[in-house]
Image (spheres, rainbow, N blue to C red):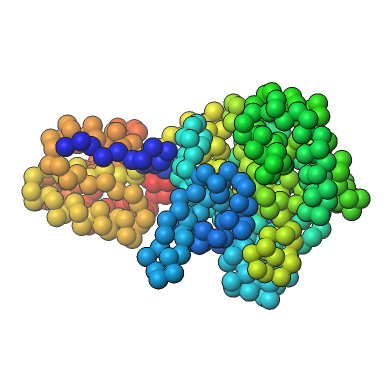
Length: 426
């Protein structure tokens, strides 16, 4: 029989790694709590229509990357594993009439997403993100709060060489004019663009800026008008205020005129935060304002701004900072002979339940030597040895693994012994 392995682009998180995942998750929860954001959890799959309408049917995500299937219901509804989180959050926002409960909602999430990508470092088919959505405020201070949160979170994790790249792509009205202009200027040079970009030029010219081909980028530099130079006065003013607030908050940024972000729902502010500790795939997070999405998905017109950050990317950046040392356990119970087994299990149960002490109990009936090796491997601070004669005499041998000293403690006194002296654990 051939082994069954996990699917390409997916991965298992084993205990030695899940500890660092948990640390980061806890850090996210704590950070969001301090900023007054509440957690939202949405289902793993949604109606396909949500993403087609929300993200845009000319985007790569909708065209190439979604896991979609037909439901067995009578209508043959199309369902999709969620490839991003903003549309589901907005769907939930509308469905539960959150607008009626409060004019502003600050939400955050930690979740798994699914895209049929060509797997590469830091890009998986099932990947994880955390992010925020601030729904309800049209004002630049909301953009600044969201950008500053993303930046400060990475700073708090100890990541260095952070750069905020920021741009404005104006409102959707101004964009139509701009796209006409962009087409006009690039049409004469269409032949020189790569095939994908030739297609983009007709279908969705804004996506030209996403192309990784250096030749296409050079053509854009030479001939393309920049979107931030073609936005309304109001949009420019909004953008200037955001930058001004970032200055006040001492957040360094670069105005990157070519940054448009890969989703159709963005308006006005778009931004990315990058770090050199990631190599070429340098973006840690991205986001922006999406003032039309709530409306597009059937809600009342409601402004919103958010960001999403990749977990895997963050862990790559963190791995260059620190090696995680897995925590050891407090106590290993060595059992010798069958009579010792029930005693050991009862003691372990009591220590865990009443004292919150981490305890491993031997269940392989190995030799004393093998069990002591196991205790060392599991970084136990203490070993309790229970054999036939310990059961007879009601005394266990306790060994302090750090100092090497050994002493007897009555079996029914063990729980007391480990709680009197706080240094014994944690």
